[in-house]
Image (tube, rainbow, N blue to C red; front, side):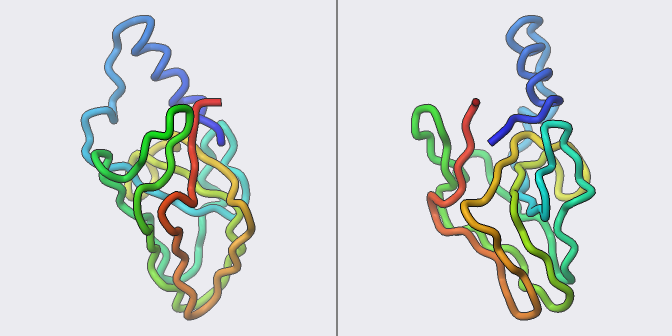
Length: 133
């Protein structure tokens, strides 16, 4: 798991200069799927492209469970079903907007997920983990 360079800089500015993080007050973040690592640069070029794909809305107040040094997803996360096309998903990212925006944190899946028509990607509670490395 990696925090993006942009998020790292915003956290440091908040801690050292008292600058508020622009997405702090928003109620939601968004989970995105990727076919390759979005890297700490927060690159969206490898975001999933199967027909029907959309990011999943995650309410900040309830989406994550604090495990001390890592957070895990609190409940089942379901993406829209694939209606055409295919992707091999290897990474996920938490983003600031439903489309575009910024990557906040990203990580590799424990195993690749092959998506094709009729498949609905989903992650059970506790299956995604993020932390500050």
